[in-house]
Length: 576
Ligand SMILES: Cc1ncc(C[n+]2csc(CCOP(=O)(O)OP(=O)(O)O)c2C)c(N)n1
Ligand SMILES: [Mg+2]
Image (cartoon, rainbow, N blue to C red):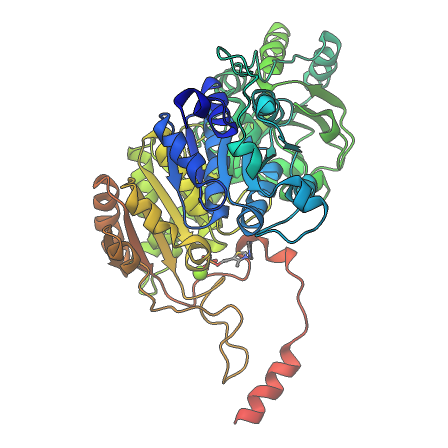
């Protein structure tokens, strides 16, 4: 194929359209029909990162989207590759991470007559309910437009996951008609236009805050995504309104800021008379804003890009629609103008509750360092110590107890430095997120994983080692989902049981990474700093006591409980 002919192929146009729009990384797994497309991407100067499972590749692209505010791009093969990626596409959409999943597919005429193609599936139609929008591009001359459309859909309004279906014939088709100069490709103008609320909407919010004796800000990962940390820090320092961060919003305002109400979460939610939601949704994570967690008389002010989020669970007394930065740029001067300051009685109540809870927490942490039964507190405290000294380190976390205790213990000081299981609480996101964090930021990354969570995508340790990424994977091994003592029937392994003596660290060794094994606080402290500072791929297997860990971590209330006791007693009796 002559070079100018190659230039006019669908594959080349796709790569050029992505590059023209500042997208230079591709995360994926190749095979029919996209192998040469990936090769061409490398030849054209893109970076292609090959994974071991599509969900990890798509998760990585989603994390790239969250971290860079540009859509991450993932590439998969048809039917099974597409389906493996689909869960991650759906998750990205739930999490509002901008992502474009591109899957190779069969030619339409074969699919539409259901002729039974190799890995044939009507992917375009199947993807629709799982993403913000699906597009199919059937002709090379449409690729510039298709990529522009995909990017704009992913990043504008509420960001989310977009599916782009790429039939095999579009990849190799050549459009001789295309003008040699621009090939139908262009750079998008203002992909996510800023959007500010009206003065009237601002006045409405200000008049509610003005009367508030006990205001509370709840900061969600939307705020982290929108990069409005300087505005939020300014708002809090000018008004003294206390804040609660959702888990991925930790660090938007530093956890150690005096306005943090995180240690007084229950008290502040119970008593706040005005709740100001900034890029946070009133979903299950916030008990839908319901009593008794929330004050039933509380008024809600919600800052969100998407008006359909207002009134999703509670009456929103002052909806502020727009991008968060633009809203805050209007709201802060309006509050400064009326010299709003939070009542000191409220701040003192939060401070007193914080001091009481911090003291309890400190005791638990101190006990964790000496407890002969090594558990979460002893295992995770060295990680917190490290993050206080080196805040510009990225943290990814998943698991149940590992996630929940780690979230409470590890203080974050910088925005967008924590990624976790997100809105759906999904296991198997950890290593994909960690890989993208390392690639997109060039910084050290810690992936704090429960032993069950690690199992979902553990093979990506090979990817980490192959690309020599500075990622420390910490596997908190208690031998199970929630804990390792879940035997129900004497001669059967329990449903929650995994191997408590498994040596997850040896997986790193298999692929040229470093491996560490620790069984107490001091060993963890000595090892963790060394492991991260090596800048090398490594796994630390942290063997804790299998009895450590509560059912479902901190959300046991969501897990239906059956009265199994009589049956369990009967089975036990029969054994004796
Ligand atoms: C994709 C997916 N499958 C299953 C679950 C159910 N689940 C919730 S937490 C969890 C694992 C918890 O165990 P582990 O990672 O070892 O953390 P631990 O509580 O033991 O520290 C599982 C399987 C899930 N959240 N996501
Ligand atoms: Mg476990």
